Image (cartoon, rainbow, N blue to C red; front, side, top):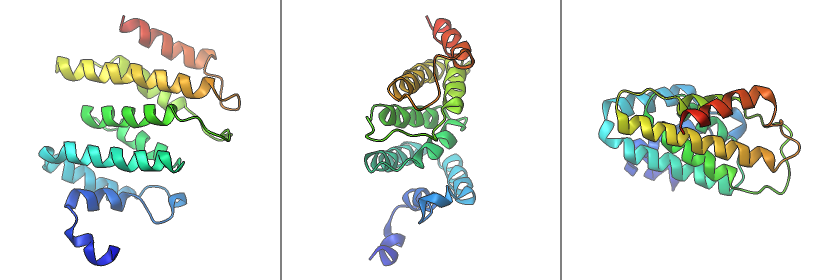
Length: 174
């Protein structure tokens, strides 16, 4: 009864659900992401619900070991909205805490190191938001380190290209 009841679901849930295609290999649906972004901007009072629903959806994907959600987390981190960045970081940290049975040969964390490092240097005009973004950046870096240290097959987090971003970001917040 999925098709007949979808009209009864809240609009924000339908918009979030439409981002994800039937086949995870197809990637996220960009046009539907733009619709959700527009809806979020025009109804900011719904941001908490949207973020919570995205978080639930990502958590389910984490539990089911669907890793296409990392693309969703990446898109949320690219947002300029501090709440979405914080929720994306929380999702990534939950992912980082999962111990996987099989290593991932293909996963790269360059984007996450760069983005979380940039968040550590946030100069957002609102001090509470700035502090929240910086804390999320630190937590994200911690998650990247935790995830990569435990897996010998992924890139070496201790290489200069990563440490040149991580160390200054942490020192900046001390």
